[in-house]
Length: 92
Image (cartoon, rainbow, N blue to C red; front, side, top):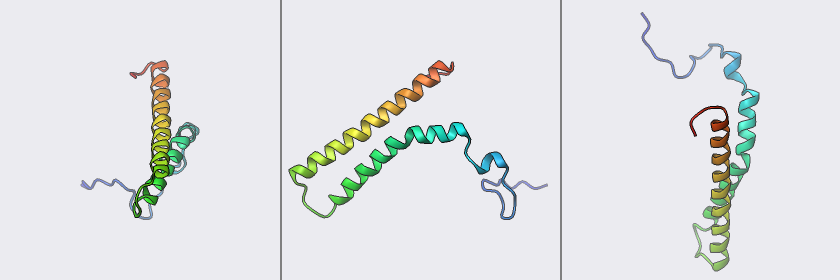
């Protein structure tokens, strides 16, 4: 009896079609998350730029702005997800 648990399909095995490509629903969810992802990447870029130099007032303002934008977009995304879940009869 084979008792091995495969988290990843073994080499040479075929992956079922439903696992190979994202569904339209999954693509829509990714698209909805894109602004928040881009804001987090922007914030990370600002943080990286500040690693090797003293922080100026302009840098601090840029960092606060990028952090606030990322936070606001994540909050909005979470709220939309919770509202959609509630409307579908799920628990928010």
